[in-house]
Image 1: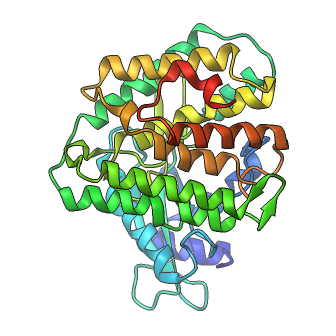
Image 2: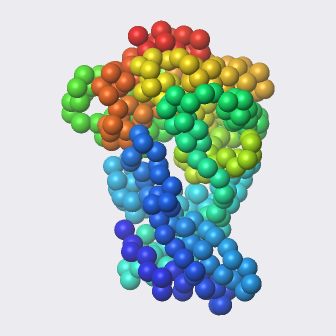
Image 3: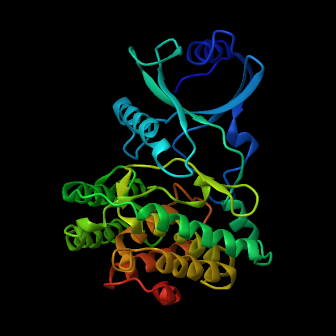
Length: 361
């Protein structure tokens, strides 16, 4: 991956913003704000740039993507992701804006775009605190606040709002279901990333999950009327809260359009995960927030059938949080409960939020 120098960054800023731009500071964001006590793996290392243009001081985030096994092996894979980010971020309500997209050449010079070796996207800087810190606080045994409920409801209403924008494109809906199964960042990329055997997690178990998800693909592929505006990776690390319920979202992924259940399951699996880590079962504040999220979404959304499509998307998100690559510090008991949850939600025609403990058994 490119090595960033002050000289190269300042030269780029002067080309992009002003010949008089001055780089004041730059540094890896993760050094200042932890990714949390559980999640470890990530696709790239965002760098915050603070620079002066005339009398104004601005901040931005430079994001790259490292080569890896989740469909990012080739430079063209990573370039596709960066170009898509730049094109799509500004079209989703509350999403931070992309300011530029460019590349590094073989001498680590940043430019916009000819002899590219690696790509980057430059996003606006957004103030806020990652939502995962709220969940970590509850996992440490602190009390459920009124604000916790308000934030959960706000997130559910936000999804209901963006999902209300629909698109007619049966082929695109089928593509998004194909990508759920076969994309390097999705189900098959995840199952291929597991060790050959990890405790009870065997190749036979992973193959059975894949096969069940593919049966779901055939069940859902004609529901093209469900194609909606989506975030695509709506988990706590991609939500920044400021005061109260004011928030921004980061890093939408894989497509502007998709199945609404993808966003709903991406967030709500985290309430289950944190409860299993804290108590070994689904209870307490996380059960309250989980049920509140689902109830609010169903009540405020025009989508009354999301529970009938949630199964394979919960399987995808379950494979993420049960992964020894993404979450290396989980106990084997928590992973076992997550896999029971995956198998059981794939085995029922409709997900029922009140049955989560049953699904984990």
